[in-house]
Image (tube, rainbow, N blue to C red; front, side, top):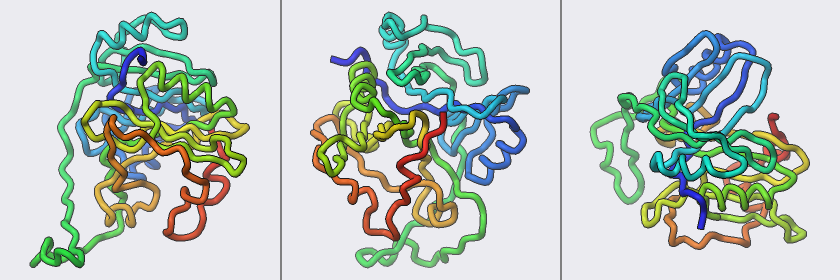
Length: 278
């Protein structure tokens, strides 16, 4: 049995040298300032999470990935682990409590509970006409202007590691993540490990954490969900329409590298799989 079962990914934390430029970039990307201090920028989507991305002022660095705990008791359970700190009050916008862990690659992992929620931001989503139902948008024209996509929420983080098996085992044993897909390299070894949260019978995202096998160690990318396919084509660097599975799904252990490319457009460039930000 895992120590706890986290309920979702919460945010990533990075360090950047210019918060003004960072805020402009993230605004163009589709995130919205939640709060800003002299030393940190807190960014949200259209959902109720106070923030889904934290940028601290300083030399560029990946600092942490954070997950949500179901209860304060879960934080207390995690705090007893050798790699964990005591439960602490979060002294930054949004408040709440957290425990900080260290994974096998030395990454900081924040498990949080009680961060305040904010009012959701309204965003119009037009229904899509398709061959089976041509009247979903009857009498309404679909017209779009050039703008930033509207990020709804954080979806997953990808960590690159040369000790992938230990990393996967750690997150599964400690935070209760479940395997959704294990992509095998031509030699039969694991190349990509997709892991989801365990909320029992409730259907959840296909993965909140992907461990990418390779010689580098660090953050490969973070993915954010936007509103629909129209928003996707406006923004280009986000995702929509993920698979949803529950704890009864046993996971697939025979996927191939080719399956990662999918049938849409050219093959994914090698750099997508190989880069990592320390």
